[in-house]
Image (cartoon, rainbow, N blue to C red; front, side, top):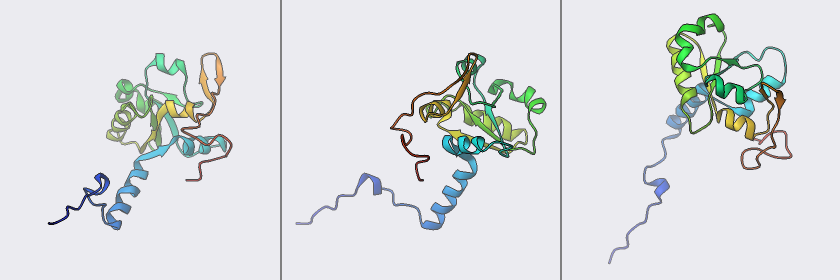
Length: 159
């Protein structure tokens, strides 16, 4: 009687060889920035070397947005990007959150126009959940840190 080998669902498809994995993750980092890295770069003050672009609607922008972000809804990028953005300065796009592909659509629209672009993973949702300051029409606010998304009593997550 032969015994069947049970394969873990994780390993049904074998991991990529290390060189392929390195190329994939290097490429991922070329296309994405996370909320805490964007916040850290902006907190230093001065020119962070990029601009942040909120691609949501005006109503969403007014609910709250990253301080200093440029508001340019995706539908208006083709006609307004050139008047608002410098092609020599990388753009970091964001939308609502990880369940929304609006930042990716905005990044695509900008890249097709010749801009260097990254998408901010987590979007506005994780900006707020990680406790970073945001702006509304009433001024600046800051929510409590969500312990499921960011360290509560540490400067960073250590990753």
